[in-house]
Image 1 (tube, rainbow, N blue to C red):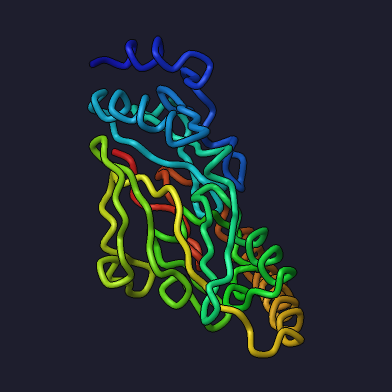
Image 2 (cartoon, helix red, strand yellow):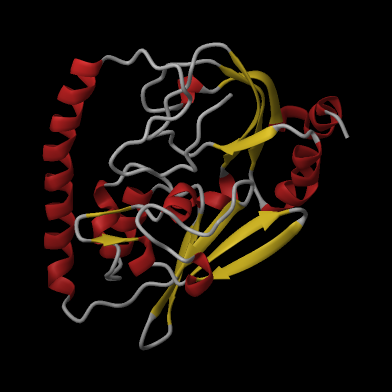
Length: 247
């Protein structure tokens, strides 16, 4: 299979010479050969094998909150998840609440929606500017907790197959996991119901205040250092993407 075949099969789901840096937090940097937007498992099952068969490196772009893209064109297939991958559902199973969160869902959005519904355990994520997909790969965390303490399983896709990773298989450590490069995270879940619902808002807003205070310190550091980067990835305090440099 070739890149041209991916473009032909993908139609308007595939953009050539696509802006990549402009989609990150800092809005700087160059382009990728193609950017593939996937809305559902059906899209992934159809276009995933074509993406892999191009032989190009694949980078899944979430919010780009820890990504700094160099100028120029990069010989890469970018993947962006939307639609089904941004959904959030939960069900009460008595002793626990099972939450299914799509990889494209923003962590702060999920934290607020769950706490509004009375589900505790994810308030810490209200101040983390990333998506579930990147957070699952890097064991994102902050304010006293992390993904390892919140997630029971992670769903991924690779080589035409869907797989579910258990918490044990993920082997979470500080900002790392056993998820290999090329594994596309599609969703994850399982949180718990609070014994004291009145504490949720306090925990959530406290996380927001701490995040804003620390963000001011980070902006001062970046201003002093400048943003003349020649690599693709900038590792921040909360790395939420699968981080690596481009050749």
